Image (tube, rainbow, N blue to C red; front, side, top):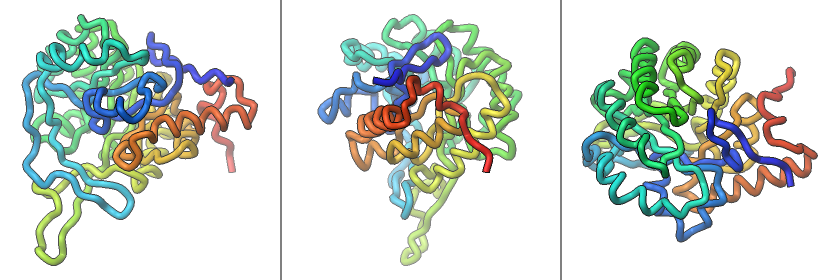
Length: 304
């Protein structure tokens, strides 16, 4: 069997397939469908300092090549997450990465401070890129100075690996990536959803109550591939590719342009066993190509 293990900061993953935040619940919801421990890691839904109800309905709409969502980071808050959700993940034989967000820099720091003491938390993914909240989100992730401030502040609170999740809704993603890397990020995950909108032409009303939302799915894969490729040329820390991965070939594309791992998002709603199928496809590809270690594929894009 090929070696599928990858290194993310100080965290060693047995394979490069993860789930994407917001598409896999708190990590327990998909256990009836497949053995979650087969994955390299799971990424929980976003956790904030206080509980959030999220945005008003409707907040999900299907599109021809993906979906719009405006959930608004609904979650139980960090204390209930620690007390109720994390204990349910104790038996999982895979890495647990907790996605973290806040409305202010000190909120990010406080959530990280509480989580870093828990042994079941293996790494933290800092969400500075959600387009569906009024405070924080894109306002942070589009500004390299604020990005650097947030990363530096949470770096003070933990020695666990810090992954910063980047938005594509910027002119130059490399500036944000470099700011995060300089300030102590161990890795970057990209991309978060692309800002989008859809309208019911009969009622002339938006399909999402908040009007705009985050677009995910196959429609954004070319955008994500380009952003990963650009970022790989500008930073030396590991990259995790996200965006429209619906099969193993999509995952291989991300790895070839520079990602060392991938996250599966929208596919989870289409096929709950999708992440395992992607993993099995990667294994077959490496065997067929006689690739001994998947790390040998990272950044192997050839010129036309």
